[in-house]
Image (cartoon, rainbow, N blue to C red; front, top):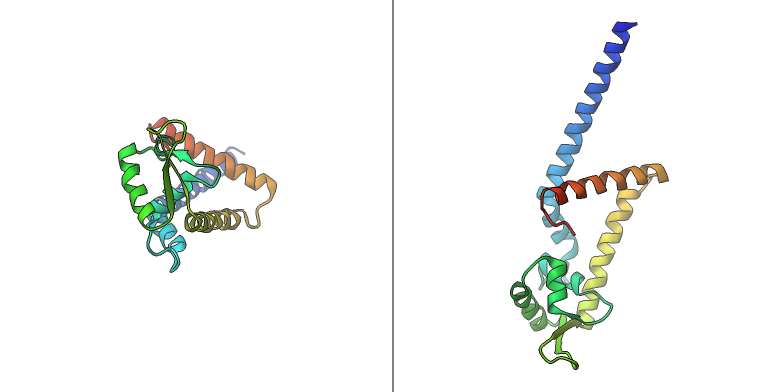
Length: 165
């Protein structure tokens, strides 16, 4: 009886170690490769004149209404100066429109042009397909477990002082 308990405990520990190593390997590979993978997936022939970073600026500007530079910079956790450089390039390439606020001329508002909206939709489709691929074949319970695990990961980064979008 005691031997069986020890064997069960050893087996459970081995399963946990295998789970740990598998999860660690997947996370390390994802963190290492994710930007490159996303770059290759979303920067197509049509959008070859922008970078993955540009695509995230486009995503932060969004489709809703013009946003001021400070709000977008905060969303991206960058300075307004850093955002200005990125926006200047996106304006030149025709993805972003920039104008002064009618109410306060000091405020610069940015919004997506038609070309920017097209890039935004392309990027959104990629993320939708990515989430659908992750959830493929999972039942509600498995989805809840995954969401719980990902929230734990997010909390881990927050607790280390890393801002995660």
